[in-house]
Amino acid sequence: AADGELTARDGLVLLAVAIAYTAVVLRVELRGRGDPGATDIEIEEDDRRHGSVAWDAGRLIVGIAIILVGAVWLVDGSVRVATDLGVSEAVIGLTVVAIGTSAPELVTTMVATVRGDRDLAIGNLFGSSIYNVALILGVTALVAPIGVTDELVNVDIPLMIAVTLVLVPVFITGRRISRAEGIGFVTAYLVYLGAVILFQA
Image (cartoon, rainbow, N blue to C red; front, side, top):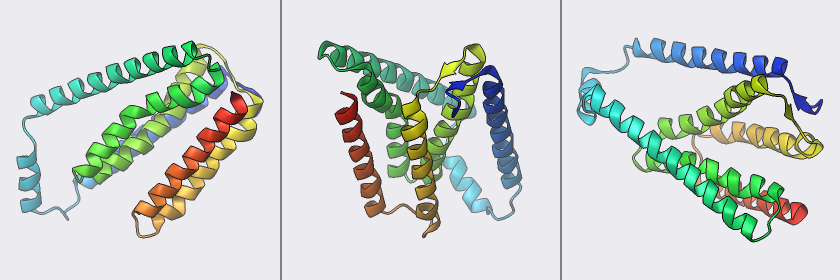
C-alpha cells in the first residue's frame, strides 16, 4: 500500500496469502483430529451437544444469512442518517460503516464467549480480519486497482500494525484476555474514534 495503490499484482499476492492460510488451517485441523488425547467420554459429550449434520448446517446457513442481512440494514440505515445530518463521507466510512460491518463479528464473538466456545470467539476475529485483508482486498484489487490515501499509509495502517503487535504479549500472558485488558482496548478504540471524528469532520 505504500506506493498509494493496490494493483492486480498486489491482489494476486494477497489472494495467495489467503489460500495458503486456509490450507495451513485445514492441515492443522486434520492433524488435530488424529490426536489421541481426546477420550471416548469427551467425544460422546461432544456428540450429544450437536444434532445431525444437516440440521446444524441448516442452522449455520440461516444464521449467516441473518447476520448478513442485519449488517446491510445497519450500515444502510446508519449511512442514510449520517448523510442527512451532514456528516462527511470520511467520518461515515471510518465510524458508522466500520462499526456496522464489525457488528456480526461482535455479536458472534460475544455469544460464543458467553456459551464457553472461546476458540470459536477468537477464531472468528482472527479469521475475519485475515480474510478481510487477504481475500477481500485481494479479489477486489484483481477486479480494479484500489487507491490508498496518504492518511491510510501514514496513520491507519501503522496503527493497525501497532495494535496487532500489542495483542501478542496480551495473548501470551496467561493465554487469556483479562477484563482490564479488554477495557484498555475499548478505551484505545474510543480515543481513536474521537480523533477520527475530530480531525475528519
